[in-house]
Image 1 (cartoon, rainbow, N blue to C red):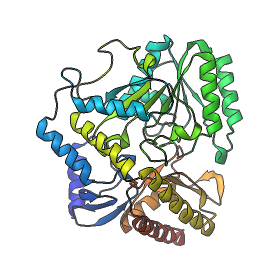
Image 2 (cartoon, one colour):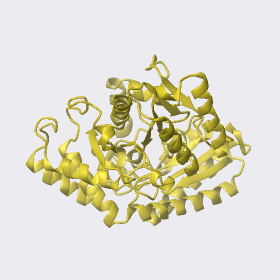
Image 3 (cartoon, rainbow, N blue to C red):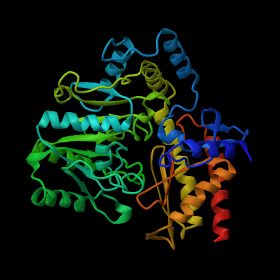
Length: 429
């Protein structure tokens, strides 16, 4: 039995079944966009810990910043005796957030916590209860976040009931025939049939859906939502947990639409692999909660704050937003050529910066998702040495999230492995 198999058996014996793992690849070390497992096998990483290590694995500057903080202290609880680096980080995030309004921040530990707290703040500020989200959206695994999530399997199945006064709308998706006009009409119908605008606290939306399939919200749609929110006194929350910190070619994907959200949720790429999340929003809104109503024991973990401050420097000094655009252009070009070669199997290729997707279908038909090929391609890629993730409500999308520090030659190497994997699978069909 291999060491990976042995570790998998040990894990299966003690981990709850619900916390599964995509592959029996147990990591020994990782550097930039390469991972080596406990058996010495090397992998090109197109997952980045699900968009967490945008700055690459084991970035030396981030390691040094965390080591320096660890020499000072690891935890005091920011709500008891805070520290300078959390103040500095909040100052930088409120400066980076889009828009001219004065802003404030709150820190928590996970993306789901950020979403939960954004909803709490919205309800406290507006004195309203309704929350509107979108089909295909993903906002986390806690109870409110699951309720907001627009994908049943595996995130919601068996876990209900969910909080009340949550409403879902169709997400505009040109490839699947859902127009912006249809989404806005559904919102209008919601206001007439289910809940009046005066009871809606917030609308939450991902500028690019993550788990839902890497579909980008049109800039015009986000602008229309902004106008409707202003018209009805509804808060607009942009969930930037997967899209933030350079991933799409801008610091935040919302910037492409030229709008200012009332609040933004941040996590994943914020701290280079250390647990940290935040809500950043307009100051008067963020101050709605009473002291003690927000936070958490490990919120603003000092080591993560040190890492996050260095992440911001690395993004700027290593020009990772520009690098995201270069990676995205390369991947789109290579995958589009692959689509031309296999039009019956690859229905669509799309990207915003280094947030890249390839949707697999049968007979070139958008209405015939090929989840089986998607699952097989992920597994075949692991055999050949490239780590990829699947996503999509129908489980038929390969999503690519390479670290933004990835050398282009290694991105090409990973794409070569992907192409070889797909060719083998198609020949066996």
